[in-house]
Image (cartoon, rainbow, N blue to C red; front, side, top):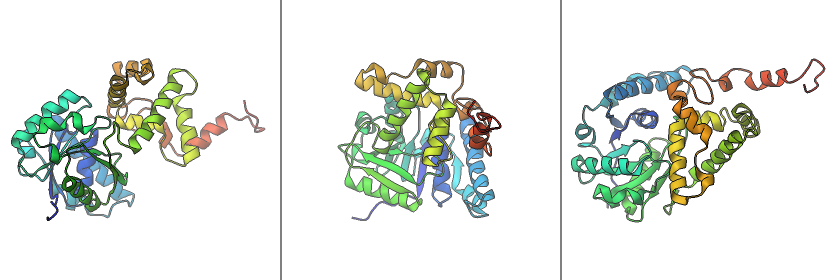
Length: 311
């Protein structure tokens, strides 16, 4: 049987992850139609994708001329029907709520062609909780995308996902220059993401208990693992409301009080401090402290007196 080739993608939800996925597709020549229930969000997504490409052209991560070549592959759809009609794959990026995703996929399935593959870009929800709402569970699968420059994406089926669907998805990711990480059995939160979740949960615990500041947690992480961002910066990128929703999914599944999102996180969200997308979370944006040249060294120098003794 000939493997299904993905040439056109419909992206439903134009937030942080919808933009990241759109960026990853169009720079590799895959056509993207993007839709959001808020028309202004789709317009903002196009500008954000353009910025992502321009930044990488400027610093050499992408060749000059990539933007001009890629933008014709991106379009805004005025309706959900237009977005998912005639595409090879639909990727959903709505908030991390099971019933919402089920409603969206029920509507998508009424418009998408019979051969269209349906993917949910959820961080924690198992596909088996959504698949039957699509009417085609064999063509339904889970994605877990990360930041724009991440080179891997987790892929997971549900018990009814066909091997052909997984094979087509894996081939699609390789076409985009991305390494697919195949989670062979369905589990809440994927594989690599569960490891990240364990880190994230412990970080939130340490902040809630007043053991360490977000800055020192990130500083320690960045020094230890030689990364350019720490866990708190990463949560700001994801969105603290999204982090909260993910933690709530784990709490609902386990009933364990230790899985409940901490109070300080709820308070930050109530204050509109959602991270990068609102200009403030653990850090202030667009110029967070951890990106300041010499941030680690400067911080060290403020802790030492002129004789090198810790103050």
